[in-house]
Image (cartoon, rainbow, N blue to C red; front, side):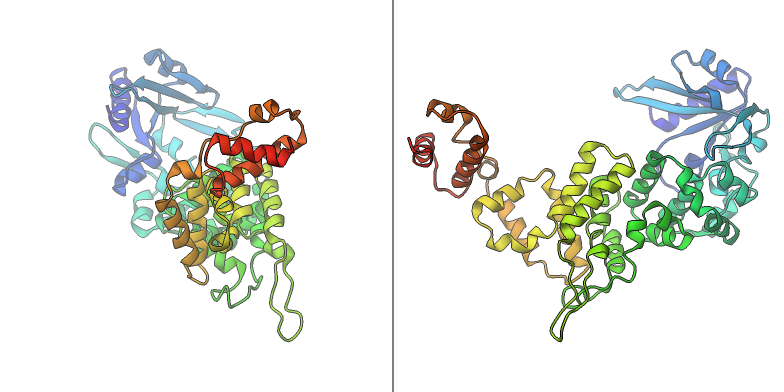
Length: 445
């Protein structure tokens, strides 16, 4: 069973029980655009309690807001789920996110008119495939317009995250934001800070990975949202760079060019690493000194890595994602040295976690500046020609070996083991016996 078949089956079951039921929202929009919906939602006049009775395996995760999740195990072993929402009219949003009260209604039209944008306010009758359009959403789909339903200011007062969603939809579909809707976003942009860090993070991550990151961040800047959610990125504007390395222009231009190169559905950590890789440049900018001087960004990598960690902490990233994003920032300049690296250093570099992301960031960095890919190609050849067991060999010398030689565990352990591994990676020792002889010489036994 496909997700769409499951959603239509839910609608059919609800109708058999005497209720109205329609596909609604983004899935209808995507169907009309000949896109594969990411998920399916159903709207009905059945109350959450009746939905739960009709579908005993349902989850009452959002019942207080009229939403029930209906699930089923498909024949392929995948768990399908569809959100079933009761027609409702919301009464006030004092926290800028959740309705203060939920009043159920029998009217599909009233339900649609409390939703966010016209292109997301369409209903599809799964029996006749007729589209119910109470908000002129189909006209805006044809015209390529993101327009708030009803009064834009009212929609954004209800849920401030809708401002970021407007930007994301406009970027993803290549649409324009209708002028009144745009003005409302600009008016309320400073209030985006009322939205939880997690919701902002998730929306920005979607913006970065849906294939239109450059346009998305240009719209964030145009609406005033960028300064509020990522002031560190906003500060890149006008920060000049040495033209011999960056003929494309300032840090903001360079970063936007890299964002444009991100592939749809790329990893979130790569996308954030690209966005933040030069975040340390604005605070470390030093203008040219003297007649032969040039613009400098001394220690911008170290500063940028710390800033990336702070940003990830502020946006409540997981520890694992924070570590990877900071590592991408911290290591992005190391590629300039790869031809001169000792074999051990080069192999340790290639052993960085998710090295493919480091390599792709470097590729985008080069293509968005000087376009010299020599070091990128050098690294690709090294990875292609070097067997994995030479990059990640089993250690020839272990802590047990050092203990057997009479060395007590302590701070020297790590130092000796790492030095021995360097010798192994450099090809100076190749067997366990050679490693033991090497250790005896270095320990002095």
